[in-house]
Figure 1: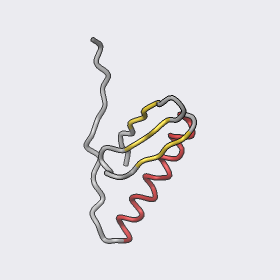
Figure 2 (figure 1 turned 90 degrees about the vertical axis):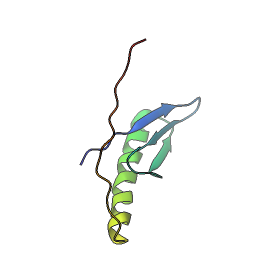
Figure 3 (figure 1 turned 90 degrees about the horizontal axis):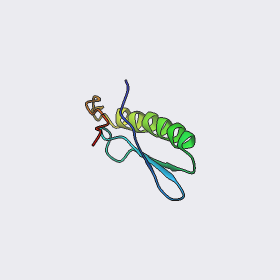
Figure 4 (figure 1 turned 120 degrees about the vertical axis):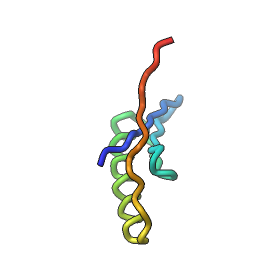
Length: 68
């Protein structure tokens, strides 16, 4: 599965979250580190859902840039 990940750059860190997996977040010092950490967070999040017998949300979000 592939999930959309939103990255937000702050003054001192980069945050990442997955709209289709509420609560699945990561924060790092660099973009590359944030991407690696959110990948690990997604894997752990899905593993936790499976272990608890909860449904795994199907990816349904998408992102698109809009020029203004």
